[in-house]
Amino acid sequence: KHREFGYGTSIDEKKAFEYYLQVYNDSNSNYRENARNHLMYCYYYGIGTDKDDSKVLQLYKLNLDKKKKIGQNSKILV
Image (cartoon, rainbow, N blue to C red; front, side, top):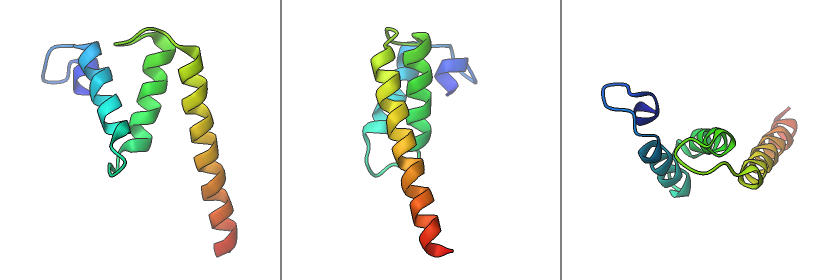
């Protein structure tokens, strides 16, 4: 986020996108869902990468699937 908005460093949208992609691709990362949301934003607005609506939709569907699973698990606990 620092590279994207220039917090304490120069703005480098391409580098910010690369960091988000790296975190998202790390299956052990605790910030993977957050990185996925940032990637959707980048793909939607073309920040650090080309605009790509198909990638936005793909990532959005993953978010919906994840939230659906969380909802199903919480029903079991109730």
